[in-house]
Length: 262
Image 1 (tube, rainbow, N blue to C red):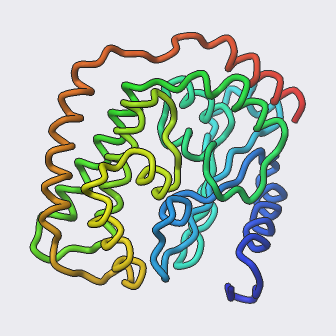
Image 2 (cartoon, rainbow, N blue to C red):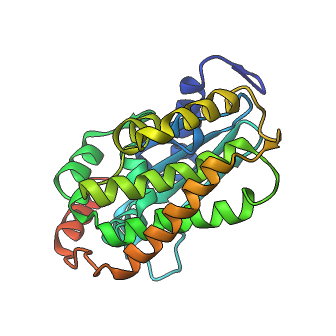
């Protein structure tokens, strides 16, 4: 790929950017992944790269009395969208069972990671997954995107996947009680009803040939499917009890360990 003065694989470009961030921000990066449509498996030809990372600072930063920033917005242009979360912010969001953070942890596109992060996630953080907040996140995402993008006669086909994917994530969580896979194809193969697969496969075939801005007639069969699922999952999530893990000790132990080692 060509990016300003750089020509080469995007993986090399991302690693150069991460090294630059570490040096200028005085941080240690723990985990770097691709998020968004490229990780989900339905990027358009002109999609940008949504790079997300988790980092840790030295102990003095966390002991400071001054207000401190818990994220880094590094770059946003037509090719790269790079930002990251501080480790403390990440662990606080694991405690809330933040669905986006579980997606970052399970992305199929990993640019860089560390044993420290892998151990943290596998031994501690994944135990904080909870069904109700995760279902609420995916239901809310699907509902918002459906009403914002798919109500007109002419729609952007890419937006269908921003609704179908969270709906299938809801179905996965309902059936399997664990974090849904990031790749759309895995969700389709595992939980999409057989009578909908042909319509979704046809939609995907058309979408990958379209640019981000292209529109085409809405697909009634898929719209009807979406509306039924939105109604069902709204009722389901409203009826569920809060199942978040209230314990902080395990996360705090890992936080202190990583900060003292940084």
